[in-house]
Length: 114
Image (cartoon, rainbow, N blue to C red):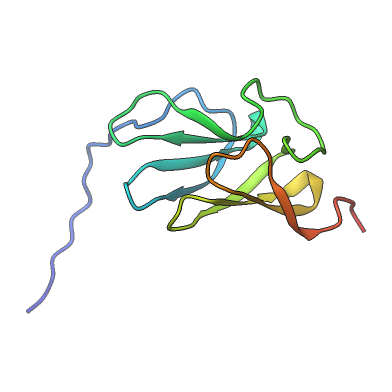
């Protein structure tokens, strides 16, 4: 038995008007999470939705160093309970954002470049 794989030449846009999207992840419900580096936030897109919701960082894209802000998030990981780990690149830290939280908890890094 040999599998034959074919590239689908017709793409579907699931999220547009993003500014420097970097990392992405899916949760168990197939919601899409995108680290939108240029707007210092993580957006969540429910399956079939055309608009996202800010789940980490500030909705208006403001960067900063406090627990409720991000500065160029690059990679994300979503756990089975929808908590989100964020590699907050310019803040030199990894934050854990518990599901429904408006701020993160720094679990690695000092927040300063060495």
